[in-house]
Image 1 (cartoon, rainbow, N blue to C red):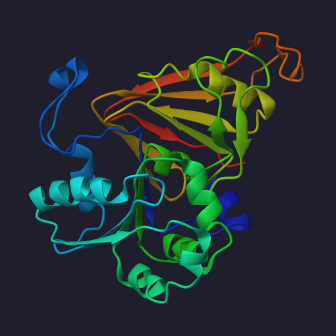
Image 2 (image 1 turned 30 degrees about the vertical axis):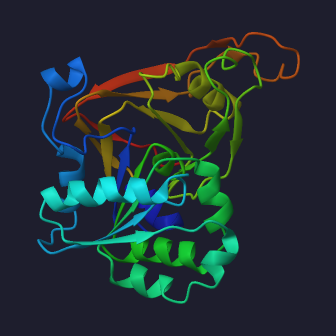
Amino acid sequence: MKANQHKHQPTPNGILLVIGGHEDKTGKPEKKVQLDNFMPLEILEAFKDLTSKPDCIIEIITTASAEGEGSFDDYKKAFEQLNVLQVGHIHHQIREDVLVDEDLIHRINIADAIFFSGGDQLKLTSIYGGTEFLSRLKERYVYESLVLGGTSAGAMAFSTPMIIAGNKDVQQIAGEIKVTTGLEFLKDVCIDTHFVDRGRFVRMAQVIATNPTCIGIGIEEDTAIIVRNGYEAEVIGSGTIIIIDGYGITNSNVIDYGKHKNISIQGLGVKILSNGDKYNIPLN
């Protein structure tokens, strides 16, 4: 598998931290699952530690959020608790802002870690797609030791395909889940977040049934996967992740879109993983 990756694309030197949203930022558990399996600030501390630098520089990108300043303040306070004092804030309202931001590439070049907050993942792809900023991020992720983190929408944007619409009210209807191209840090992988809390299994299954080459990774809140070498995943946090693959699908009605039929899929593969479990993402 790894040799195949080297043949077609270089193995990334960087590390991804892909978070299911609502990760602990206060050190206070909020759910029973956290009370039973809680380590204060576990995920954000892991993000810091992945840089292997005690005085690391972190940039927080809140472009996906409608409340960028408030989101940044929450993360800044959390990282201060972890003794991270160099935390920058990047926020762009429109694509033009990225194109004229003369200081942006310099900031990306000196950062040890970049973190994408939650919000609307389509903002991230529509604002950053095709920019020098995104190209430089990918270069540093592949050829250097850059750590990239994303939570909620920020995590969903790492994937391709990327879900942009289709909530629990319509997920059972064939063809109601909308996808586009993500930022492509993970290819042939669909990331969904708040996965158990918001009941998103069926919508992920629809995505995988439309293209069984892809796998789906559904990540619960306050839970994350660390991805090394582009495919070696390890689970951390207080919840679970659910992996859906379509390699064994024998039949589905996903092509009946527009007919308002309930989705039907037979032969899905499912795995449920929790803290400490490891999983190798297939390299196609």
